Image (cartoon, rainbow, N blue to C red; front, top):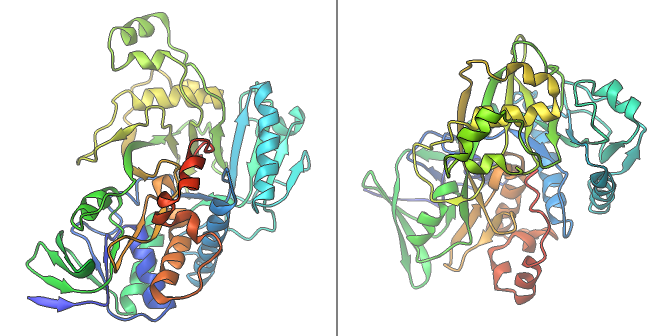
Length: 449
């Protein structure tokens, strides 16, 4: 059977669903088809902390601009839906016990201000609201006064010398957000087909159709690669190579029945590298195995957590990409069995009260997926070298927060609307620019957190 579609979006993760919504609901485009062999949002989109932020490093303002626009759209959707996906604005709190990093905190806050993230306030603090997203506070609060830090964050280690509270940040429910967008998109005529993509028909350098595993061929002149960890495989069906790689990232859902972490806490991030507090016997065992010996070395900054769930929930989500490196994507995803213990030890440096759980026999829920990244950790959004082919990918661990803004940008390409100033920063053709390639040798820290 052969059918046709105006636009075929390959991948029903948040990138594909947000684009389907943008095209069908906001722009009135007809003939949009979503294709995915898996249930919507089930491959990668539900595997993150479900958080958002406009706090990003340089070397320019492009990421802050994209995220500010995406957060504008998130807030509009929250108002439109009566906040069905529970958007909050608790913020991200970065803490350090390193005197040298205090100056870095100040520089980071000033750089974020220059890039459009908002003003910097030093030791002039207003506490966050635990629910809702209506707040006039943007930018960041830099706390250097030890008494202020102890008053507002008494659960942090007493060694904390400085705190940055980035304000236009928080989290929301990925499943509720995706379900809302998908429901609205389908009501506006978007069709969802549950089938794998087995081939892409390219004729005279342009897309002509998409072959599906159920025997259908969808005649189309426009294909969107929103396949997440499978984006490289889909691109290969068109004879293309993408500058993307995958990293495996795990997430721990931990029952904090002692309520060490306040239920109204913001996202908490330890900004310092650290060595874990193993005892002598543990060190000896870890040293015996090549796969575990690295846990004795200094591990990177970035261990983080946040409360999860409302009502009587005691769940805390815990993450730490201490072993991130490129890997080929495979399913089911496997994880380091030591991950729960390693993350808990790392977080006990940030919140010493969590050490009460060390050595206990617990079975926290462990899941995760793949971050699909470019070298500089910026997304790919725009046209590909095959006419009619586009990419919405490379969203790393920030796909949920960037999806609405990225969908709007790609829809501008598809409908011929004027492009925003930051469009070229995410276009695939940036890698054809020698000047851009030269900049990559001196890029910032990638901005994962």
